[in-house]
Image 1 (cartoon, one colour):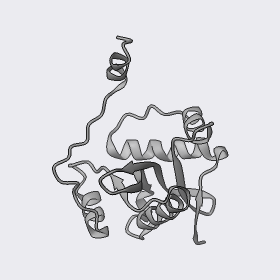
Image 2 (tube, rainbow, N blue to C red):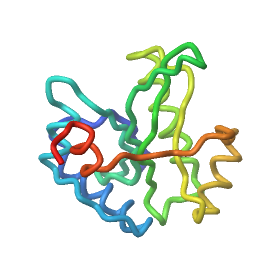
Image 3 (tube, helix red, strand yellow):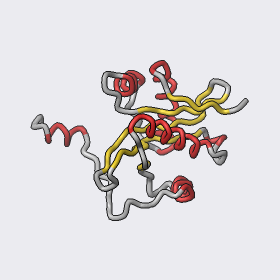
Image 4 (cartoon, one colour):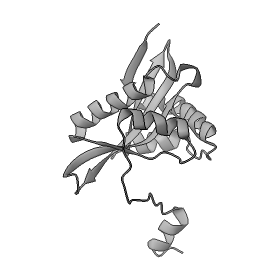
Length: 159
C-alpha cells in the first residue's frame, strides 16, 4: 500500500505525540509533551504549529512539525521545522524530503512561506548529510539560543 500525506487534525494528537516521542527517543531527548499539550498548541484559538503526517496502511510512518516565522533579512515568511521524523525501516525512501515539500506547500498557502529553517544536532551526521543533499546551508555566524522556562519567568519578573 502507498503512502498518504495529510495535514494532522486534532483527533491525531495522541498518535502525533507517540511518533514525536519516538523522535525524542531516537535523539536521546527528554519528551515532555502530552497529547493535551499538542491539542492546545496546535488546534487552539491561535495555533502554534501545523504538522504533515505520512501514513501507510493507517500507521504514521513520518511527520514534519512546523511553525511560521518572519525574517526581515529575507523580507518574508518562512517555516521553522522543529521536528522531522521517519520510521527507521523506511529511511532512505525520500519520505522526509516529501514531508518537507508538503510542509512548505502548506506554508506557502497559509503564510506565503518562501524558505525553510531548521536545526540539526552536531552529532547527527546522517541527518546533516541528508540536509546538505537537499541544499540546506549553514546560517553562517549564527548560534541557536534558547531561553528556558526559568529564564522566561525571570524575564517576566516572576523569579
